[in-house]
Image (cartoon, helix red, strand yellow):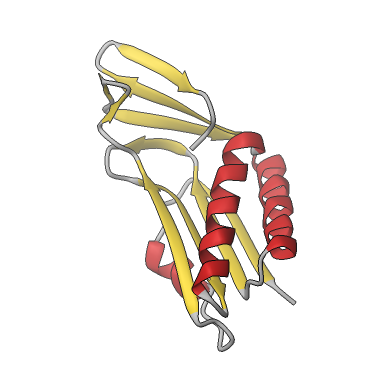
Length: 140
């Protein structure tokens, strides 16, 4: 059985903790994605970001996406931690880690999950800059 861990939090996210949580003796490879707040978006300066979520629905949707990844790829474990609240440039927004017996499956599942969460997961981000603010289409 696959282990799936999903966390929506207003606390800082530790990439190492998320990556370590997917360690498994059947896993020959672990792939991770770390998303951070960048200082520019579409040519506009960004000084901070506000992330909001329908936390219960987001967790349910991310669990669904991970279950779909399980049916498409042979993976050992999946862990996602997604931050909400006001973040500054350089802060970690999301950490996704996937372990699998083989690297191809780990890469495939990681890409699938991050692509799908941008389509359906009820998490919204607003980029804030000097004299500007804009909601971003497509989530993280």
